[in-house]
Image (cartoon, rainbow, N blue to C red; front, side):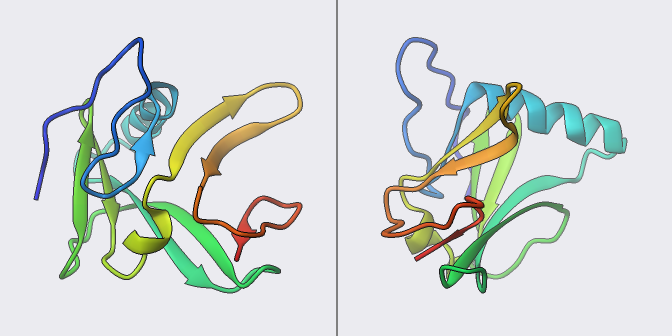
Length: 124
């Protein structure tokens, strides 16, 4: 399942079929990283796995695979994939990219996380 690109400049992007929102800044960064890899078959996969200090942890990685039950959203040419088991944990989560002196990297703002740890990589 693929949707049209979400490109709203003055409003927060609408949640896609994956339930995840990829900000414009994050989409540009993902696009640049994929171009650095020199491949056009990669997509950003976001998953939730058991582990971490709070019980569950996020995984963000590039993937060329298509798994049964994957939910795919397109953000201005960047495909974001969530597996069906992770989707309920990620509904409404916003993926952003920070490039500041105090923080650099992808961030996840997840309204479903009841508790999270200081590292920001794990939640409950």
